Image 1 (cartoon, rainbow, N blue to C red):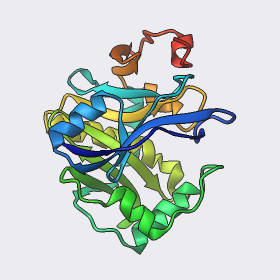
Image 2: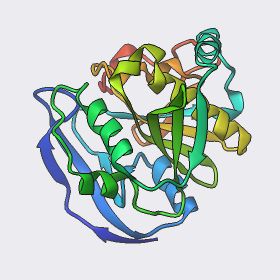
Image 3: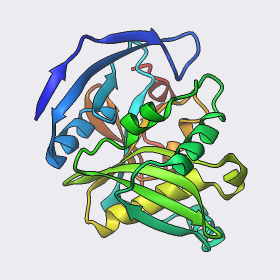
Image 4: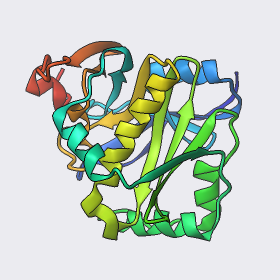
Length: 243
């Protein structure tokens, strides 16, 4: 692995109002799928070849992963799969186009503080060829309505970002995409599905404990957070980052 090291960045937090977000960061110049596994296990996320992880005092952004070998499909997940039985899903090495960019732009309007991205920024964030990144496409009545950008490592799958047309929100395409990513990880014999950060006090990031059994990375160690029966194994204060 070859990287370009960068100083830590400090900026207003994009997840919690009034907080400061400090990130360790670097640019990847060359990376293997095994390298990606190691970085995910260390709590890193990425957009394109820009990699980062929170190094904030509050410790509210907690990396989360699903234990694929122990996962059992929950009743609510079965209902969602039945509801969306008409969906068609494809995994592709796709090229960016105006349709995909439009889905991304429409999706970003759901978030209060998100600013508009250029097409070039969209391409740089999600379509830089790293050798292990793919795209899941979701079609409803033969129309592309959702995308999920994923990485496929040696031992894991990582959900990088999911976006969908807001008018199809009633189908819960974001939650549906996670179920399909779990299925993909099972089919490929992977150990984990990484879902990015769990943030208790962010309504867009707190749902991830609904996919279990799962682990959280607390104080540089992965600990069991929710068991296969849905029992919470960590305290509420730890979920808020109060370690």
